[in-house]
Length: 316
Image (tube, rainbow, N blue to C red; front, side):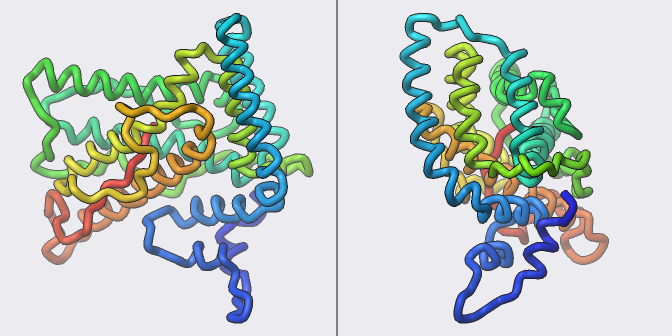
């Protein structure tokens, strides 16, 4: 990105007679979120692509989902190819997506990996294998990045709970919260493409990619990908339990996976999921910084009781 999205919003003038709604959201600090990620998300959301393209793309994409579902009744695995899918995704992202959209997508995998690593590090007497996804450029999309993203989450939950059940344990807060897996260092990614064709916003792109995703995955893979979004609440409860504040959660909008939603709204729910992941990671970074302060009563405080710890759902 040639110009940082934060610089864009910092330079916006304010007219009290015509206040900019995106500037208001950028300056609002009620929700914990990385400043650069928030600016990228808002700048992408205010683009002409989202304003004019999304209303046209969304109904067509949802119609395509219905038609592909019917098609797969008769030829369920005819088009199945993760190899082809991820090359379509790679070339689509490289050619058409805005720099902010590509930045947010790649960033999401790293944030999610750190969140799962945080849970694993703080579950006592349980060893959970991890397979972190830490893409630095778009080339890594070709390595089944999106499919592995969904597999990682379900495998993590299965492995974690099998170990807890096998050892007769329950998820419980440790003596001291370990924030080591959470990085407060700004994420560095390779520069994103900025050709004239790179204009499609994140929400429109997700709407377009969803039926493509459905077409080239098995029905099980697509169902799993869609329903993984509802694990936001599950991960939020895990984090809340570890931080000893299980009764307060916000930004959990995908609801519980025991009552699965249909796939038509998957693209919008994916946007909510991305916001949840960013908010949870920002909260953990805030708590990590608070725990490491060398002065005051907060030093050595294992659970940071002085902070209003709120579980924000996220997933890898």
